[in-house]
Length: 322
Length: 143
Length: 169
Image (tube, rainbow over all chains, first blue to last red; front, side):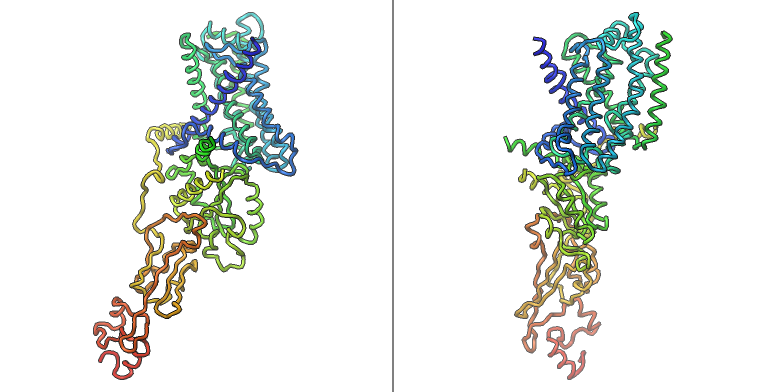
């Protein structure tokens, strides 16, 4: 029975169908809000669904200098990684998540799979624009993984030290700690860590000011240049899923509060919190900032969010309680 | 069922621009149809994409000069089917003011099959939106 | 950073400023240079518009039976520059403010404006010729007016009439 439950979790809720719907909804809201900030009307909210259906009707063109098998198979790596990650994230009050002692570390590795898929796909394309695109993607991945790691260490240590150990990487324990002692967002020593995590989100998704690999005007769409038809649809879908995973992770790590015990209300509250995270970190930043250069982005990521996360880490290690 | 899918799909055409030796007048008008808030083309679901492999409707401006002819034909081959070609401005339709020049051999429909013409020098942004709407109707029949 | 956030919030509150076209009406200025319109009653077939046309879109050819002239302007080669309207001596050709010019490829060569300038027969010998329109008579004959009815005669008869007694007697 548990195998069937696992398949249900992976394909319908909360992975698969639910995650795809939520991802497309988040992308639609992002585009509509971005247009409204610029005083335009903007596309309807269900536009990403239409884009997906349209992309499946186009023919697939493979360039001559490309490695055919790797080119066709690369988009699937990110998609399957994100589906697996969606099974693990708990939604408090609705779904407990796959509990094990090293949940968070596995999630960290799975979060890197879409970037990996982009890199493999781009290098299999055999075109110079894609080559520049994927080398830039590698650099920016190194940049934003550093503060992400420090933030996850901080949260794990906070929960672990409260329970008498050193660091506890299990998401189930993190959520039960917050249900007992209040969410981490109300704890002043953890606020710098929250800020550092929110700073990493634009680079993870790949929007302005850190969308250097996919710079449209400079590189003619960078790594995705040679993809058309179902490959491109798979990449867009992976982008939407990554939005869901990263905002669900932010919600689970820092503010997983519930509103009562009815599952539908908790689900809607979770969707609302995801929308809030995406609106504040992606849409507003995208509408008011310009794109940074590669060296400026690296300098920013390796100083500001790392410093903020280290402040939280030191305060947690010293056991300071405010 | 096919009709339902066609009605859904026609709401998301992606546009790609090719400048085949133009003076940039029509290019400026094409950029304003998408980017400025006043003539928003994203309401119809369109999006300017950076790669020819993502495109459905291609807008070509400029007379096809001898230097740029090979490159336009190569980029045109990279666009996946089904696609619609729109000739913007009088230059690709008939040569325009450069008609008897030494650098122009044939208008655009001597090289590739054109579907919609939008004359004007440059055409008004509302006329370009008209042309794109007609192109979307033709694209629906080709799906 | 603060100013941009304030602008973003103000924009969200003001609402969209998009023109309603193609779902509604749009603003058309009165003097917009749009498609050509030709009035054959006022045309004297001087070929001035054909000479100055930037795109080479205008063509005036005499009909084979000599009863008039065919006037064709091909909209697909017209640059809407307005030179023909500026140089026309009688104001027969002018630009409307019609900007709806998108059409399908199969109508490409039939997207024209075609009129026929009719010649009138001479009052003396009956040969058809290009008439002089009343607006230009004042320019040619001044305040004396056309006393001998020269504007209704063809060139040969006119020459004979003037050779006999001059223009105004």
